Image (cartoon, rainbow, N blue to C red; front, side, top):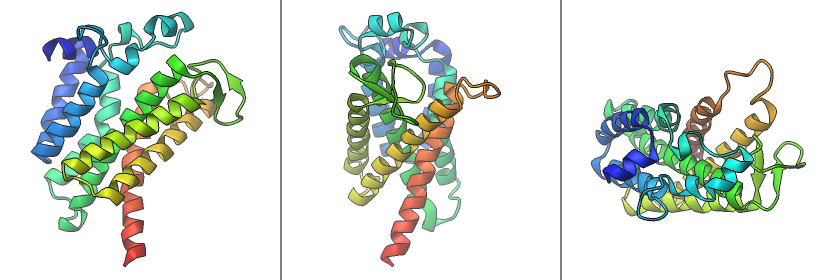
Length: 243
């Protein structure tokens, strides 16, 4: 396991991950162990002999490097990536730890926690599968065909893989008793809306003059936070509609 952690992230990235685990652990031991560790295993199980780092990031890594769209540090993710991936989950964890809003909102914070994981895993899988196997990639704003790895580009292969990844993690949340079936579907839907929004940001603003600060880590924070917030709002609307 230590080898997997070392190869999947930089050492600073692993420090940030440990901080995330400590913060989230107090929310619910079962969901934190299950969701955090499962997501790590899904992303960190290496290709052969558990030596090559993140599984989806390492798919066709030589091809991605040749195209200039591979993750830096040989696929290892640094502290910025971990912070961007975990910010929304940590906020939901803290809201649950301190019982903000009382029992009426307790379920929503767990839902947001699960949705944040669904959003991130879906985003990572769709991006990496699209870079590796996407036959045709389209710019989300114009549907113009663009090279793989272009900011804001999507592919059928990557999109479908992202949906499956989100459904998988929502299913884990259901098995662990953290969400029911309708809530799991809310997490999946919220994650896909958030990821579409991220693609819009990438196509419209990223790498544009005046938006140099809008790097991948910042966009990750916006994307995953949007996934969690959308899930909470959608659940509130669903409950209101039913009552």
